[in-house]
View 1 (cartoon, rainbow, N blue to C red):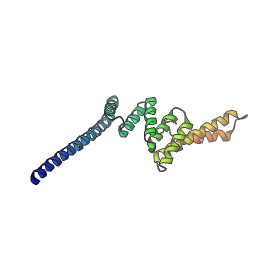
View 2 (cartoon, rainbow, N blue to C red):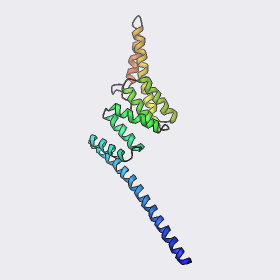
View 3 (cartoon, one colour):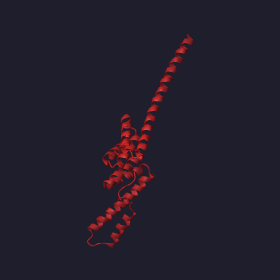
Length: 189
């Protein structure tokens, strides 16, 4: 009786172990598939196959709609393609789903700055820096944004002055010279 019970226990444990191994295999296969989709999308993007890369990510996201990496990559690709509305929606949802991550806030700021919404951009960058004060890209983007805000303030001052001011004109010129040359508007994601 003891031997039979031991065999039954052994068979039962073997079945449970087999199920556990199968579940681990399936989980790792799913993660591998996601990694494969992500790397395939990156390769397609690098090869200039941008619409295919976006399609690859979108297909992968249909399987795992909450995957942070896939969502973020899709947002960056949409932003690079100039689809700012779609990118903004993606990054906004990432800030809501992952409020402790600075990068979605940084990228939202880039979009706001590109649309001329400098105060909104500043708020997003400040949030990114509250979350990660040493975030180098957010620091750089904030510096570029402050230059744009300074030029805007100097230009407004110039408009309301009664007489032209050489000093103010020089400030505008010097500040604009410090701004990034790519249309003075494009921050980095």
